[in-house]
Amino acid sequence: MVGPALPAAAAIMAAYARARWLAGTLTTRARIDAWQQRRLRDFLNRRITAVEAYKDRAGQPLDAYPQVDKATMMARFEAYNTLRLDAPTARSAWQAGEAPAGFAVGASTGTSGNRGYYVISDAERHAWLGVILARGLPGFWRQRLRLAVLLPANSRLYDAANESGRLALRFFDLNDGVETQAAAVEAWLPDVLIAPPKVLRLLAGRDSKLAPSHVFSGAEVLDPLDRAMIEARFAVTVREIYMATEGLFAVACPLGRLHLLEDHLLFEWEAVPGDAMLKSPVITDFTRRQQIMLRYRMNDLLELDGSPCPCGSAFTTVRSVAGRLDDVFQLAGSGSGHVAITPDVIRNAVVDASPHIHDFRVTQTAPDRVELRLPRDCAGILDLARDSLAARFRHLGARVELAARLDDLPPPGPGKLRRVCRTCR
Image 1 (cartoon, rainbow, N blue to C red):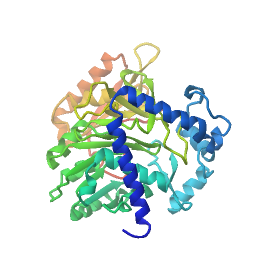
Image 2: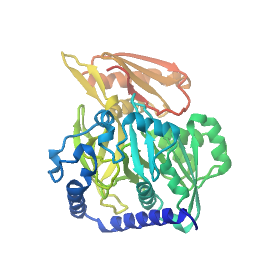
Image 3: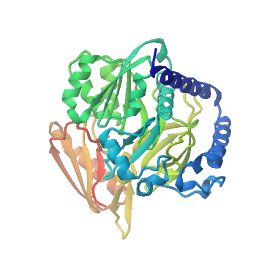
Image 4: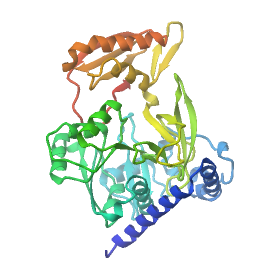
C-alpha cells in the first residue's frame, strides 16, 4: 500500500479496532451509561463551541440545550458546521461533487419534501467505515471482499471502503434504472450486497447466479414480507443498517438484531401519539466534530426491545424501524377529535389479512379518506385486506371512508418506498 491509501487504511483500521474494543468493554448498561456521560461532558464542555450555534453555550446540562430538527438546522446550516457553509452553498457543492479539501458534502434523498445536507471530514468518513466493519463485518480483514452498494445518491462516504486496502466497493446509482443496475450487479457477483429492501427483493426475484455471503438492508423500512423473500432466495440473514443524513445510528449483529451505536451517540426518547410501543429518537452524536448534532430530533418511529440479545451485546436492541412520524395517520375520530394510527399498525392490518399479500400501498388522502391498493394478482383477497383494515380503523375509533382497488404498483425506482404514506397535512 503506497500513497494516500496508507493513512486512510490506517485510520479505518484504528476506528475498527476502537469499535471492537468498545464492544468488548461496554458489556453492561452501567458501563455504557458511564461511558456516554464521560464523552458527553467533553463534548458539551469543549467540542460544541466550534460552531456558531453553540459558541457561547459550553458546559450546560444536556437538557438546557434546545432540540433541533431538520428545518431548524437547514434554515441556519452555517451555524451548525465548522466550515460555515450555508444550505445553498452546501447544495451547490453537493450537486457539483465538490467540497473543500479534506471534507465531503452530502444530501438526503428529499423524500419528505426537503433535502437535508451534511458536512463530514475525511477522518470522520474513515471512522464511519471502521465502525460499520466492526459491527457488520468483523472478520473483513481476513479476506478481500467485493461490496455492491445500490442507492439513489452516491457519496464520498463510500469512497472510504476502496481506501481501506481490503475492500473493493462499487456504487450502483439507482437513478440510472434499477433493472439496468441489477444486471450490472449480477455480472460483478459481489460478496456483500447493501441496498434498500425493494431492490434486494427485486434482485431476489431474478434468475441469476448472485450468491452474496452478506446482505444488508438500508435507507427504507424493512418489512417482514420483504425480509422473508430475500432471505429465502439468498439463504442468509438480512441485516439492517440504520443510517440517515444525520448519521449512523445502528447496525445489526450477525443474528439480525439491530443494535444502537450507544458508544457514539446518546439517545433520548419521545413518546409517539397513537402507539405506546413506539418511540421517536432525539440524538446527540458526541463523536462528530465538523457538524454538531446536539439534541437533534429525528423523524423516525422505533420499537425498542428490552430483552437481552443472544449475541451478547449490551447495546440497546431495536425491534423494528416502523416508519416515519410524517406517515402517522391523523384520522377523523368518532367524536370531535382525531385518531393517530402509526404505520406499523396499518401495515400489520393489511398483511395479516392473508399470507398471499406480497405488496400493498395504503395512503391517507384526507382526514376521513384512506386508499388501499393491492397488486392485480391479489384480486381474490382484496376484500379480505379491506375488511381487515376497516376493522382496525373501527376498533381504534377512526371514522374513515376506505377505498380499495387493484393496481399496477410501481416497480422499484430511485425514490424511497413508503407502503404506508400520508399525503394530506
